[in-house]
Length: 161
Image (cartoon, rainbow, N blue to C red; front, top):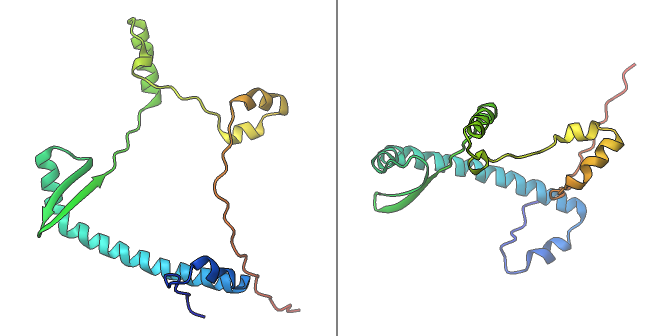
């Protein structure tokens, strides 16, 4: 079986609707294989673009003293933009000490420091029912999208005596 071209004029929903569950499984497997191949090819292309642009990008960021976020540059007649994400973590114990020091000096640390309360799900699950009941008003559960997978049958093994 070959992968159905869903880009043809007939709506894809009706094309898939007529397939058996087994055919849908096969189409899913073929589509995933093709997707994996295309993702690998895209990764190679992205890597080559980065390799070609990296020196100019480094110089552009240094000249602008902008080492994160979005920056635009031009190369070989093409306008490009690069995005560098920034992730900041804070030492919680150090922030607690700073907050206490600020409070002792008469400052309000809440103007600078955010405090987030949370309960680890494993700890919640290990609480007794009475303890859980105390926490329930503060707990919201949001479920993610459900995913359905085909379970491949296990190969039969010969019984050797």
